[in-house]
Image 1 (cartoon, rainbow, N blue to C red):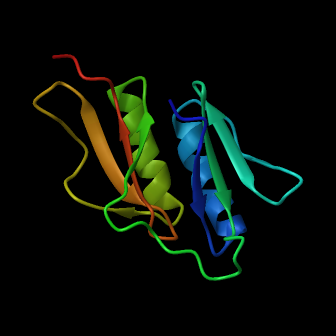
Image 2 (image 1 turned 90 degrees about the vertical axis):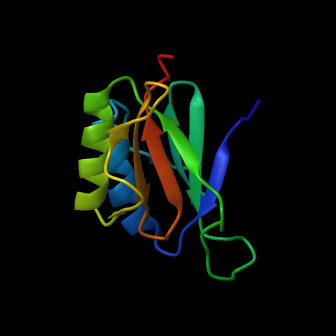
Length: 124
């Protein structure tokens, strides 16, 4: 359904450190900067793009928005969470845990305040 998710950042180098670390923890690759100055992360057929807002105003986090990132295993979720908190992210909600549907889930806010979750597929 979606081709990509685009979020704003006020500091692309800070965002790069955070997202490179978290995508590497999931078995992905560091992001690439395109000709328009956007960071692009491709992983498992999806793309996350990070840019400074084109209107010149400061980037703000979505109120109520969450970006979900697929993880292959509980170990990947834990590594993602650890990498994120070590690179400027903040742990939020509950500690990483298994949900009633069998998915293992963790939540972070990136350095710009965007809410993210890494999770395994449900088993039930």
